[in-house]
Amino acid sequence: MLNLLAFRKTNIHINMYRTQYRTKTCGELRLSDSGQTVTLAGWVQKIRKLGGMTFIDLRDRYGITQLVVDANAGQSLIDTANSLGREFVIQAIGEVSERQSKNPKMGTGDIEIRLDSINILNKSVTPPFTIEDETDGGDDIRAKFRYLDLRRNPLKNALMLRHKIAIEVRNYLDAQGFMEIETPYLIKSTPEGARDFVVPSRMNPGEFYALPQSPQQYKQILMVAGYDRYFQIVRCFRDEDLRADRQPEFTQIDCEMSFVEQEDVLVTFEGMMRSLFKNVLGVTIPDPLPRMTWFDAMDNYGSDKPDVRFDMKIHDISDSVKGHGFSLFDNSAYIGGICVPGISSYSRKQIDGLTEWVKRPQVGAKGLIYIKAEEDGSFKSSVDKFFSAGDLEKIAGRFGARKGDMILVLCGSDKRKVQVQLGTLRIEMGNRLGLRDPKVFAPLWIVDFPLFEWNEEENRWNAMHHPFTAPKPEQLDLYFSDKNEDIAKVCANAYDFVLNGTELGGGSIRIHDSKIQERMFSILGFTKEEAMYKFGFLINAFQYGAPPHGGLAFGFDRVCALFGGSDSIRDYIAFPKNNQGKDVMADAPSVIDDSQLDELHLVISKKQ
Ligand code: ASP
Image (tube, rainbow, N blue to C red):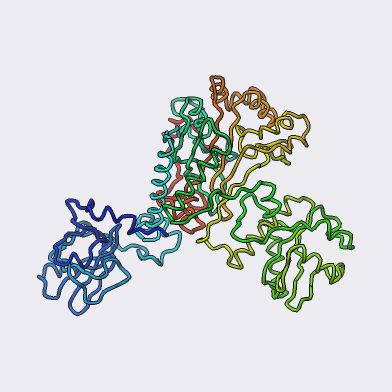
């Protein structure tokens, strides 16, 4: 974790925190300050009375300092101390003194302030939960009183980490010649595959802006404008159903470069990540980072964002298990499995539980077949009827199974679907076996994505990244072919940065040639008019000398959460939305009154 004291050390010496209200902060006084008279300001964390003395823990952003009101202090000081409640804001003046009973867990634990006076700056009503590292407040109440939750160390440290990462990003990119340029929030829709948030225009009745899903088109236009290294730490908006790691508004480190090929982008941004890991966490990541093709990621890990902290790779056993009279295998196009170490002792009940788990709609498998490599060297499986001990041993050999391991097998008609199910099962088993230590970091690049994916429902091609992503230059003949099977083979000049099973970022080399762009729109089924309506300003700009360019964007909130060792980005955002997309503190979204609706030329549908 971030060492907060080290981060602030230099500042503490120059005492930049001195103001008209305080001379010191609550985190900085040490034994060597004994004898000084100081003024502190902060919030009352705790009050204790002991043998006629009153002890007050005073808290600010920098720490906690113990204040003491002596039994023989003046009556008015004693009365003021007695009138304090939790979270009152006070100013306290007194002398730094050595403590009787020291607290080695606190930086200020050797001293206390013997008070001469207390000035109540503001009172507080009793907070609805304790402002402690371990609080008694549930999620809902803490969200409603987010300003109180933000006073607690875990959230404060999370926001400090976020700030530190932002500074490091800016420093690194500035040193590499990147310029931070703001792009507008009120724009025309940018396709990133999600729904837009829209904003009605009062001055243009019946017309709407979209909030950017990303600054994609603007950053490409900046390349046309000659700003060959752009970045922006920028808010993006996507109206999607929410999951734990999604927010309707989130922040990207958005970047674009001109006169580059994929290699240049990867080298530049793994450099950025390397410097973040080093300067923020003190962690050295490999140089260069491993790269894996999308096809290898899917075949071996069943995921385009593989967690490579642990092995447990997927093996395709389709060729060796057919023809044994087991119709499920015989009728499947793909049969694959993973070998899970040390779980051959799983009971019938545990295996049944796992079978139910893979059948959940989130996984979607039809059932689960197992082969146990027992400790005594024998093999046992749920398909013993069809496979001899020798057969099972051979299959186990394909996985390199050892005594005590259990192989879990799934099958089906769609290879990629079964691989994804196995990938989900692999992550579950990794969690169960404690193989996903958040303090271990295994970053890598995923490259060579397919350019298109087939949309079964709509019977047409979708761009896997977005419609400005260039095909691999060596595959242009396939790209211009009329045959669907050729188009399916075209790989994108695209890349994702993956860390511990999470996609932290991704981008591509863009199309800058109008013939290639036109072909893209025609494969995606846009007419010329549709393309012009949606992307006209970009297409027009490209007529005036678009340089070769490419870029990527990192999910800034996710970078922060993973650096902080957490799964949830919510703790790393000062004011996040809940699962229903609501800000329960501010009560947003909320209805607006009729006059505002009129002004915006809006009528709420009766169905509401
Ligand atoms: N605009 C893309 C995204 O938001 C990133 C990129 O291609 O640069 O995912």
